[in-house]
Structure formats: C-alpha cells, structure tokens
Image (cartoon, rainbow, N blue to C red; front, side, top):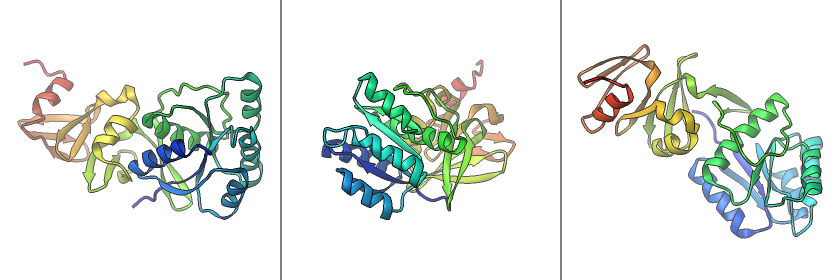
Length: 248
C-alpha cells in the first residue's frame, strides 16, 4: 500500500492553519507539524519528518516566510508552497527568488490545495520554478508516495477506481498495478481528478467508477475493459449509457 504524504504547515493565523490541516486530513495527508513563528518553523524543519511545506509569506506580520523559503530551497532541499494574500509587487518578486515549487492564494479552496500540492511535487522533481500565478491549470499528473520516492501517475491511464474503506484504489493501465489514494471515491472524483477529466470518469456501482475511453463493451449490466470486467448496478446504468453516448 502506498504511504501518506507528510505536510509541515508554517502559518501564524490559527484559523488558516486549522483549515489547512482539516482539509489535508480529509484527503489523507499526514500533518507533520504546525509552526506559527520563525523559531518554531526552524525547529520543525530540523526535527520533523515531512515531505512538503506549506509556507505563509507573511509570518507574524513580517516577510520572514520568504527567508524560511530560501532555507527550505537551499538547505533542506524540500518542495514548498508559498501561501499569500499579498499583491505587492516587491513582495511577490522576493517570493519568486526563494524558489517555491508552487503558490496558493488565500482563501484556499480544497480542490486547489490538493492540486497545488501535486503540482509542487511535480515541479520539485522536474526542477521547475514557476513564476507567481494564483491560477492553477488542470494537470493530468498526480503522485503517490512509495517509501522515500514519489510514483508519478497520469489520470488518463487510470482504467477504473474502486472504493476500499478510507481509500480509493486506482488501477493504472501501463504497469497493471493498483495504487491507493487516501480519499473517498466521491472526493477523489469531485476534487482530485482534474476538472476537465471528471466527465470521463463515471460511477457504475456504489464502489466503482470507470474511465469511459477504456470501455470495450457493455452487455446488459456487464461492462468489459481490456483489464477487468465490472458490474453496473441499475441505479447507475442510465448515467453510464448517457456518458457513453449510446443512441437508444
């Protein structure tokens, strides 16, 4: 089973840090720690077990978050995301120079937060330093953690999704492997899959959804892909036929 990604939050507004932590917990991320000032942040950067940092630019009404960001880039060598409500050009220019892997603008929407974390991991692995842009484009790529590494997957290669307790299992066609996403099936389909690809994934029973391009045949309530035969329940058959553009 894949592991949970550990997130360190550096944010001096308790309301925002709590909001971020709640969203991350709901989507299966582990909170490695929460720091609300410069000194606590440095201590946690040195002692906590984390994969990525959510870093507020303005820490205690100062731009010390930028200094912490530079340290994360050059000393700790971890991906980090700047979170800001600032529109001041000089502040944003300084933020870019710190080398973040992505940016988020307050207030943070849960779908944007999850997508931005995935984007930040990708940018860090590919050594991409994005210019400041609060709008996040859809991205086919997502990552699951395996030990000390991140496995890159592409949503266009996911044949079907299956609910398994607190996880969603995603079957990846290229390597014929199941990968675990620490999120419910509903949240995965509504918030984690990129918006433009969501119509391609159609729920076929209470526990499973299929990606339309992988369907080879639908016979009564039996759906065939090249990898597995799935059962369609009566409650979902009409929506499936509509998504398949079946002419009655």
